[in-house]
Amino acid sequence: MKQRCYIMKSRTIALAGNPNVGKSTVFNSLTGLNQHTGNWPGKTVSGAQGAFTYKDTRYLLVDLPGTYSLAATSIDETVARDYLCSGEADATLIVVDGTCLERNLNLVLQILSITENVILCVNLLDEARKKKISIDLDQLSQRFGIPVVGMAARARDGLDLLLETLHTFEYKEDPAVKADWTEHLRSDETRRGILRRAHEICTSCVTVEKKDPHAFDRRLDKIVTSRKFGFPIMLLLLFFIFWLTITGANYPSQGLTYLFAWLQNQLEAFLSYIHTPAFIEAPLIDGIYKTLTWVISVMLPPMAIFFPLFTLLEDFGYLPRVAFNMDHAFKKCCAHGKQALTMCMGFGCNACGVTGCRIIESPRERLIAILTNSFVPCNGRFPTLIAIITMFFAASFSFGSGIASCLLLTLVILLGITATLLVSRLLSKTILKGLPSSFILELPPYRMPKIGSVIVRSILDRTLFVLGRAVIIAAPAGLLIWILANVNCGGASLLAHCTAFCEPFGRLLGVDGVIIMAFLLGFPANEIVIPIMLMAYMAQGSLTDYDSLSQLHQILLDNGWTWQTALSTMLLCLFHFPCGTTCLTIKKETGSWKWTAAAIALPTLTGMVLCVLLNVVCGVVR
Ligand SMILES: Nc1nc2c(ncn2[C@@H]2O[C@H](COP(=O)(O)OP(=O)(O)OP(=O)(O)O)[C@@H](O)[C@H]2O)c(=O)[nH]1
Ligand SMILES: [Mg+2]
Image (cartoon, rainbow, N blue to C red; front, side, top):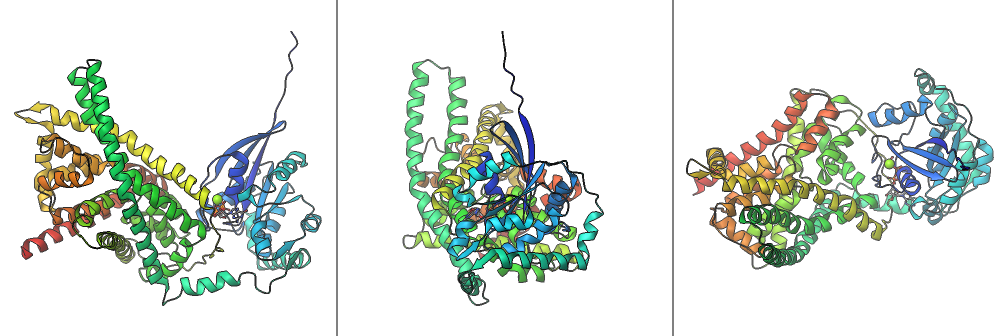
């Protein structure tokens, strides 16, 4: 039998360029993957790989962190530089920003001095058109002697041409470049020569019709980053996001609770219909099912609202403005201004925030940023805070309850930020002494986010990812609690023994043994803290069932919760050891168990001290 044999060619393409020019967006459009994108420089900090096939060739695409120059020094930029110099890629696809071509050409000229295998992708042409900037792509191609493709990657414009260009490109043999070669780029003469050439090329290829195409951004920045309005605008935005999250999450939360209660009845009926023995039904329903459904009904609604809002702000370009406004405060604490950016990333996920610290060049300041990242609550802790606030504070105010709870949540976040600053200062005055280094943070242009794709992306990427993680951990945790509650030893359940063991310590902090145990068991994922608490209380037999948030509130009240318990639990939620994933990331980034232990001890001690203080103050007032 005759057989046809196709041999597929394979090519490795490096995706390089300045930060925030759309490299990851091009990467996603080509590979169909979901590499994180965001409107600020430094979103990608380590190389990501993805593959796709076009015609007879399989391409391996390497999305590199953004870099301004091959002579750069920060960790993320070094990743890009080392890869480009290694000669591993068959070609480099350089993505440049069509709205500020001249500055981007600096890197293009540097890369061209080490390899001929370059394809230039002029991205963001849609924005350039809006700003009345036109670029003669043919002439640009002639001047450099390389193929040039115009693109608007977010709308996938120009993708076909890019694919065809990759296909027809003449790949030549490329030698690796010696490491000391970058010294040559650092010389003043080379730098001046490159700048001159970039300017000269742009003068002949770029036409700008508007006098100042960036006037709108500048005007908006004058307000958003001003001394007078910068902070109030930040606070108002924070407040507004919380208000939408808390008030919006209430109804779907209740709806889900009713739905799951109804489903539980159906499930129980079915299990008894098929004569399931009690020793299987009880752990299945009271252990796994209840914990899982609590996680979903308590966590899903706030996350599905908070994440898209946060991503909208990120894509609009507001996060670097926050870093700009906070720079002064961080400098005062002898920390790095970019720490404000990594702190903002921590609001999404502390593990991402810790990895994001790679954008900070100085090792001392990077370590401070890593050690203090979990002082702001991540998405796993937000729902816990929101649930406690909704149950204890929103429900108690008849008028303006939403406003009061948002104010409280804003205060909690401000407390987290203040603690970040104070602990950073403490560290830089003690074990991590040093002066703050100066830095340049590029304020990206404001970009209108694509609302539809932001919502889909943040729900799929973040909400479902976090929820999935919580659910995977919640099921075994629920089962464990059920077993602890139902296995008796010495006249009391194992759960009662555990909580009794934690009780004295809990009392010292103004909480109880169950709360302490819930935080300990929540180490793999913070999301499950509240469900574990409720599960433990119910297993102890105080209440049999619930079908609304106010009944959950009742469960807590019946177990001795007061306003003080709620406040202390919120403090502990804000300040305690980072979750398992974050701890592993800290170990990976610092390479040291000692610093990982410090990152665990710092927030935990802070939380304990604050809780003891609150306990003492409340005791005196009483
Ligand atoms: N309007 C418009 N926006 C785009 C386009 N391409 C990318 N963006 C947006 O530009 C921002 C930056 O995109 P990324 O793909 O994260 O940029 P990057 O070059 O990977 O950035 P770093 O990883 O920080 O170096 C995101 O908000 C994108 O949605 C485009 O063609 N048009
Ligand atoms: Mg990127």
